[in-house]
Amino acid sequence: MKVSEVRSRYLAFFKERGHVIIPSAPIVPGNDPTTLFTSSGMQPLIPYLLGKDHPGGTRVVNSQLAFRAGDIEEVGDNRHTTFFEMLGNWSLGDYFKEEQLPWLFEFLMNPDEGLGLDPEKIFVTVFAGDKEVGMEEDTEAVAIWQRLFKEKGIEAGFSNIGSEEDGYTKGMQGNERIFAYDSKKNWWSRAGVPTNMPAGEPGGPDSEVFYDFGLPHDPVWGPKCHPNCDCGRFVEIGNSVFMQFLKQADGTFTTLPKRNVDFGGGLERLTFATLGIPDVFLIDVFADARTIIERHSGKAYGSDEAVTRSYRIILDHMRAATFMLAEDVLPSNTEAGYVLRRLLRRAIRETDKLGIANAVLADVVDGYAKAHGDQYPQLLERAEKIRAEIAKEEEKFRKTLAQGMRELEKRAKDGIDADTAFTLFTSYGFPIELTEEVAKERGTTIDVEGFAAKMKEHQDKSRAGAAQKFAGGLADHGEQTVRYHTTHHILLKALQMVLGDEVKQRGSNITSERLRIDFSSPGKMTPEQVSEVETIVNDILAKDYPVIRTVMPREEAEKLGAQMEFGVKYPDMVTVYSIGPIDATEENPKISEAYSLEFCGGPHVSNTSEIREAGTFKILKEEAVAAGIRRIKAVVA
Image 1: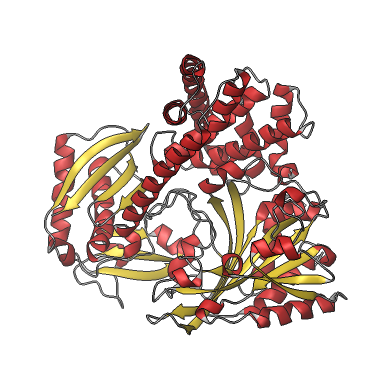
Image 2: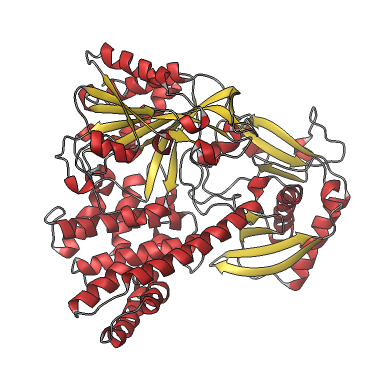
């Protein structure tokens, strides 16, 4: 099957079972300063999993664009990618295990509505329990899976593996098809294992599905094979999370009044399972890009291990870069832009390894615009801009690469210490693998352990910064943060009033200390325009306007001119927030007379007077962040 067919079959299958199809959130979250990228289908839905009502109801399904920066170093094998689509279906206090697992099994097995996979190749894992917190083994999931396999004529044996390490010792000994692992593998919460969860945190066991490609076990990963082995024989294709417990202050767990189901299945992995080919990079969406690389390099994909690894890195990184650029992320030295730059520079280095002397990456991304354009038309609409940005970055890095090589040559004679290796990585974009490679060519020593220590120190600082960022971000729903969120809506409307209706939001970052908005604009604002915007915002704050949440049909909201986030596909029913007029109420919001009307999930103040109590609105800075994109930082103090 092709990726598009797997996606459409999945959405249709769950729509037939009462689920509302919702759009993918952007790959770069617009109003979440706690994270750079959307990394799972669950991430945009966490408020609803925690109890907030979803506009689509209690059953929703989608295919979510996702990126995981932590997987960059994993790319190169047959299954890991940084960028992927995550198929997901959710029960928000509706059905549970007895419905979810049979539906999933049917979708995987049914050749007419689903994927038609061979049940003999399916293996599953469940939660083994956690004695430390008194959590029992998930015998309910085991019984359901055994029944489902038996209906296919398969006697599914059960084995309680325990830890992943135990799996390499015990291995698969007979007819086992269902394996139980500890909380490191088969438990979900935002904080990790049960002992790490704070009071008030929800969590629950999960059940993963693996596809057996029948490859021989590679003993480098351990003496015996098992479903969670990383040798490549088994590939995880889906995971059902059963969020059913709430941690109490005394460390015990109670059952949630509304239990949720969250399923996530990698679209690309499911696709290559339908083909029976143990290589994600051989599915259709990579075909055009793979052909372009082959034509320029003269080397065939799969011809040898090194060539194949280079191909895979280029194919993955350039697909991720294409989607990032389509959402207005530009290469830079901070945050999402830094990750994009790192992807591009690794891809450039791999083209060098393939002997490609000319710039080729702009051609590679054309293949992704064709492959994904039907589902994500923004790739076609912004194709020229994407090509231009990639060509510019490739030219820039090739100059940097030459400088870095000269610096490396200077230091290579006496050996490369940790400081030099770290400088080559941070200043010249040299991955440590590249520095090692060139040092080996010259018989030079390199302090790899020292470099690793410096990288750990750097990562620890980054994580600490991220944690600090989380504490002050919109996700905490603190009083001042919520005030800034509503002020953000008021500011966007004021910008349109002063600069014109063509002004659109292109990103935001809201903390308890200030608000930030990125918006489309042809040029720098004059001091007079800045002052006029400040006056409008403060006038609105002084009007004591009510802020009202309304759920309505998307088409109706669009006709009323509700502002929406760029690149987001919205469901048939949407939540909008209106600000004003003074006599608006929840029963009669008078939306057509509102000062501001915007698609948004909240949270917000109930009246603009709550913002005015905090002080006066003031723009601190107005600056350019990209061609045609300006940024404002502002406070109410």
